[in-house]
Image (cartoon, rainbow, N blue to C red; front, side):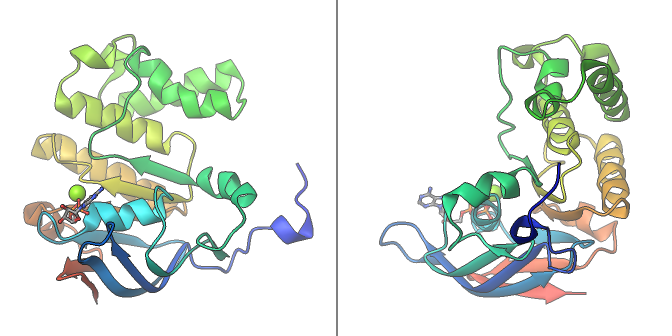
Amino acid sequence: MTLSRKEKPDEEAPAVQLDSVALRYEQGPFILKDLNLVLPADSIRFLTGPSGAGKTSLLSLLYLAQRPSLGAVKLFGTDVTAANRGRLPAIRRKLGVIFQDFRLLDHLSTFDNVALPLRIAGIAETEIKENVTELLSWVGLEDLMETRPAVLSGGQKQRVAIARAVVNRPQLILADEPTGNVDDEIGMRLMQLFIELNRLGACIIIATHNEHLVSRFDFPRLSLADGCLEEQA
Ligand SMILES: Nc1ncnc2c1ncn2[C@@H]1O[C@H](COP(=O)(O)OP(=O)(O)O)[C@@H](O)[C@H]1O
Ligand SMILES: [Mg+2]
């Protein structure tokens, strides 16, 4: 595929940029107030703050589920709040999202849930089998590849959701409480996966209220409190 000049990705552009972003739901109070942030493409950050602080709301602006009430959200140099809708699918393809509530497809097996983004992208089945099998082994689900989500535990579903989110090698990974349902050992293994993907060049934001997890890694932290975002090295 050849990209026209206009669509050529700007390698130097930050993965994420927030310019005076604010968010309120309907006429309610501002949940996010005047957020400003620049994250280079190879960043890895924890997004912390107590329950209700607005972590999921902030991620939802980044995965384009909603628009900010004020300000601009820029992904890979494109202002997604102003961009014409036709440009959004190309940006969405660069995102890998791990939802707090997993959002797996119940009628598909573990393997097929994880394979879906690759099938949509038109990847050959032999390559899909190789990639999906390797990733499912990494997250410890090699024996559950033919199982449907309904009979998986919360922690197993979470691991399927993570595998599905990263199988396409996204450039920006947004993980909402990705270790919320797994024990410490699997949590550490999942964190190793994020670190490896970051080493390969992905920008990763991990929202969590698990201080124990945060204390075990020295990633810079974005901390939300009273609607404001503070960056801590
Ligand atoms: N769809 C919504 N409509 C109205 N209020 C919402 C909605 N989603 C979240 N909120 C409110 O926004 C605040 C932040 O929520 P959330 O982003 O889920 O925080 P966190 O992920 O940090 O727990 C909470 O007060 C929550 O009740
Ligand atoms: Mg949340």
